[in-house]
Length: 229
Image 1: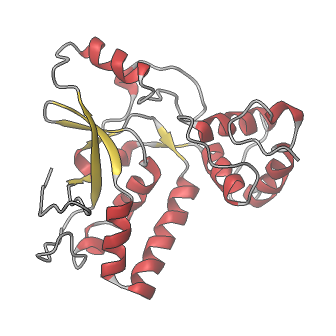
Image 2 (image 1 turned 180 degrees about the horizontal axis):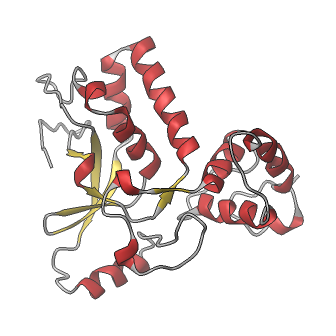
Image 3 (image 1 turned 90 degrees about the horizontal axis):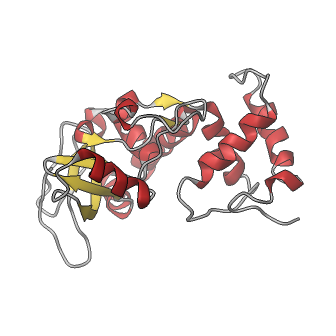
């Protein structure tokens, strides 16, 4: 973890993405790829300083345990930055001295240091009680043993319904919620509606249209961010 110059208003603490430990098993790769394209466009149209500002304003919350850094949110952005690779970062100024990186990095915000919890079971019990871990696989199955959570961001599985939930939210199907893992709840709801249907590039847009309608159903009222029509 690097700790370049830090000011009162703009903390510049960052970590190589390869050293971040995920606390969930899956992301929606279509949603990740959308973020990749947005970041490429941002750099091309507005320049490296704008990218640096964006990254600093989207710092990921993390929990520390000894020399480990656990990512507890922003997994999609983090995976997108990983997919962009080191070349994307080579000319992005990470601090006022113009330091750059040859590897993908993520600005971070330390939420808690749990290094005093030496026993792993105590650590994971605390993570679970704070809702800082989501051990469910790409099919929404779980909870899994925490040892089954990928150790690296690049190992996160693709949950297509997590992408569907993200796009439905973007299109106004439901509101942003600060309830932990709200979009995974929506992903599981849509998954249950298309239980016997394979979703791929050929029918993704059609499934999105159908999901926008499903988001209005009575069964969805219990989900966080439901919009009462």
